[in-house]
Amino acid sequence: MPGSPQWDLRDDLAARAMRLIADGVVEREGVPGLAARLGYTPRHLTRVLTAELGAGPLALSRAHRAQTARSLLTGTTLPVADVAFASGFGSVRQFNDTIREVYERSPLELRAAARLRRRGRASRPDDPAAAVHADAGGIVRLRLPARPPFDAAGVFAWLRARALPGVEAAGADAYRRTLRLPGGPALVRLTSNDDPGAPAVDVEARLSTLADLAPLVARVRRLFDLDADAVAIDAALAGDPALAASVAAVPGMRVPGSLDAHELVFRALVGQQVSVASARTALGRLAAELGERVPTARGDEPDLLFPTASAIAEEGEAVLRGPRARIRTIVDVARRLDSGDLVVAPERDRDELVADLLAVPGIGPWTAGYLAMRVTRAPDILLTSDLALRNGAARLGLPNAARDLDVAGLRWAPWRSYASMHLWRAAAADATA
Figure 1 (cartoon, rainbow, N blue to C red):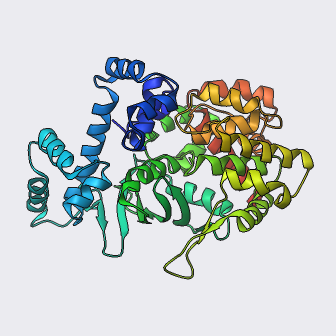
Figure 2 (tube, helix red, strand yellow; figure 1 turned 60 degrees about the horizontal axis):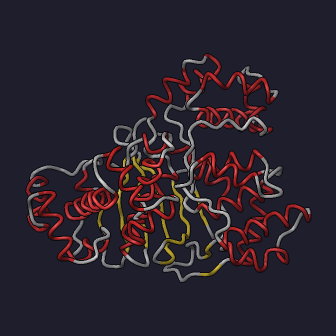
């Protein structure tokens, strides 16, 4: 089911299909749309999923919808009809029939049973019954548990260092931003649950439609890498004496993902060979010039959507600053993304995505590898061409020459992306000192 760490580790057709199913693609585009995104016929996709997982895409999507619906029924006061559509069902009747078939109870009976279970005891932080609720103002709140241990502070620090004015606002344990979802713009606030026994990210979102709840959940889980098997990763990396102290100091380190793949492409392109601060300045200017304003309830909320590929393709040359070759690359990539000639998305085969990126003039191995790491959740990428990463390696007593570090990094497979985070952390600590 969605949420299993194997879907990030694996890169076969079944794994990529499960990422899309968790994002609600079947509900929005049907099985033909799911198959088209993966580059196969619906018949072949159904055959593969049935052989691998024992069910076809419709049944897997239906199970995911039922799982979402159960959480909403047992943890919210949303009307049943709202639960049905928020879960991705096309009609209340279909919703009722599915819940009865899967759980052998009606939706109202499921809700009543949950209330009985809660009666007489305080709600725990990790209690699914306390996980999700919505208020009358259209704000949806939910708690997304993480596999412990979980270095939430590391992800928030990463986001804070790169936050763009108007688009994002970040602190030590909170992150707010605007976001495009399939149904329209959203304003999202993410905070860390400080209970070490039940690590989680709390989500507060103002959505254009409740149907955007499933894709939002999938994207936040990717951003915070909530499903990583932290115990296995830490055990593997701590076996190397060079990384053991870093793993002990920061257990459960995560590789930050992305809420918007196209946005991350432009962040990576602008950030090539410049400092994080310089990239933030350039991206902030780009967003201010070409981003779309959205209404907000409070004056201190982010109100700017990051520019679309279409906007950058049309007006990027007039707004972007820097070397002409880099500007040409950014605008070229924007046009390719807008036309569909280049597809950068979580469901892409990682090797194929890297090959497609490297075929674009101006994109090198660092950018291609960085995007594969963060967009597709590739767990085994070591970007030894990155100067900061090599500086971090040297600080930990590892080789700082790219070729030598590549050889040394072989012992971290299949978790070299997580080793990269430890090396970047060491480099940041060295710079601060």
